[in-house]
Length: 344
Image (cartoon, rainbow, N blue to C red; front, side):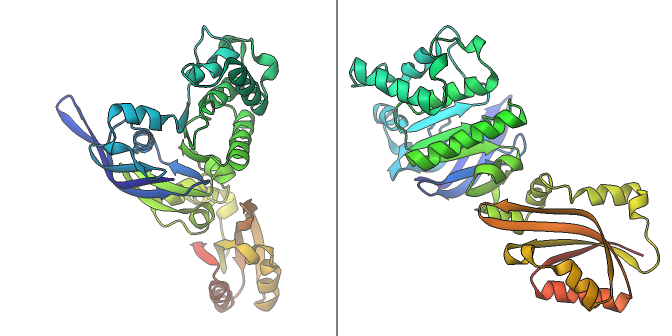
């Protein structure tokens, strides 16, 4: 549905040249929910604005549904942009217009009859759960309700693609979950390809099928959400993955020399990462019996990414050095990630 070919975007400001996006090649399949994640200044918002040419690439080509947007004249580009809806962090609603009028705005030049427009707006408000608020003004709505209006407005022209630029960043966690649930519903029921820009890995985990990680204007890692969570390669990706788990707290505790991490002779702290079928195996009890080890679990976590379980734990292990070594070898043979965090 979306394809970037060698896309770069450069800005010149105050005599300085800023490379916001550098030679990005990316494909987003039809019907997917695709996440683009990165810290502030990574280039993710600039990249997503290159999809509908709100930012025109300095170099490279952008295709949407096999149409090269970067090669179109302005008049044809306007038509193609109707296939691309967009929602923003700050909602961008017309304050002086009602909810109904905000959703109706994209249809003002539509070929639909008045009755057809009214029916369409009613359906969209019903979809986002705001039928009873149709005569309300944005100032009378909560943040979550405003974003629902923005989603309904973005869907008015029956787009093939919906772009979400940090659309949940201004919302509380509970409202964020409800908006993500709505976007997933839009994706599944309407078949719309959704591209989500975010700096929160939890958002990616909750809704996305695939994800690209950006740093300094470049895509440094990409893949299915499960692959990225199971085996992140780049340091920035590992940081993002760790941000959604309490397991990474062990590093802080070790650095602080927390009493929990003070070891006796023969003890070590291990971090295990396991996935899919291994997440349901009784690994801890097995290696405790098989290698005569005591395992005191400090942190543990198992969750679902899509349909697949993924998990990990941090434990203080006590026993003979050779037994610990053999247990680690056993775990690695089962494709379980093992990290010795501290050894006494």
